[in-house]
Amino acid sequence: MLAIETLHTAGMTLFAFYVLPSIDPLRGLALTFGVGCVPALLKMFDTQREEGRNFLVLVGDVVALIAQFSILLLWPARDMIAQDTRELTWTIPVSLLLISVGWWENYINKFTALGNIGARLRDFKHRVRRMRTKTYMLASLWKIILTLVLMSVMMTSGQRSCLAVLYGDRDYAPDCPHLVNPRGNNVGSDIMETNPFYIAVVQVAACLLCYQFSKTACKVMLQVVSFSLPLMLAAPLFGGLFIATCETWFPAQHVPLMPAYLFWTCDVGGVSRGFLETLYGDYLLPVALLWWLSFMWVTFHIWMPRVIKRNKYLI
Image 1: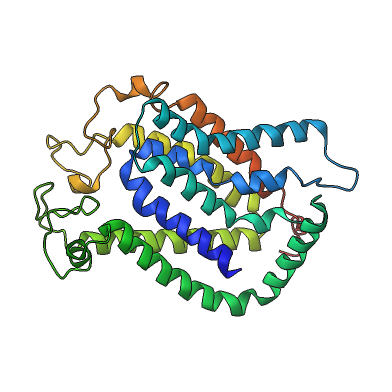
Image 2: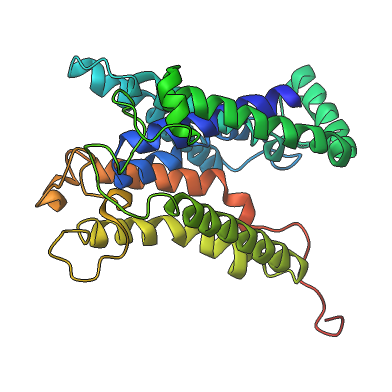
């Protein structure tokens, strides 16, 4: 279990601290649909019932599997065609694949047709669930340490000067491409010291609220309306938000929403006017839509809660 959690944490750290800062928000949002590779593969062996799957369900599983793995292959293929050897060529597929390993448990059940491997995975799943409370105390601490170590390595490229900047021992270092320092030459801000704190507060608060709302929705057995539907709508809504607000940080704005160096732009290399025209080409919007649909298919089980709704007289 610790090995699986390690792989999952390494993928999350690589994706959050290296991949996402290197690309624009629209591409980043589209790539988040690619964390279902391992689940899509395991779903292929889930017969769902003793008499087997419906043929149309099998076709849907195959299409979803192809779409999920295309996310891992299209970006490296594009870079090879363009003869671009950027590190994103390997960091994107590796991070997405490692993240997807963490969701294996939801796709192993008594109908998994993997022979002896399936039986061993089911037994391992049951043992993990019995020991989850005790083992996750250690696993959580290990994941925090691993995240800090990997983040430090990725953000500093192993340079001591960058490491000193990252942890506040120095104000500036010239060769730290992954660190945004308002006191350097790239951006300007007088409240740089407090911005990370407020961002962390917003992130922690959002996670706690999401967890609490999800837990409450499951307790009152309103999973479909209060859990599944918001998850399905989150991606397209935020996609529209990114498109509508990516250039609102312009200096001409009288009341900026946040400092310019914290805001997203339409192009990670700068301002991209008329970027909507490139959505069908450079951003591959139709392909991203297919990725989103495949992700919805792989996670379709959230629309079918196992526990039926409570009797109205018991509420």
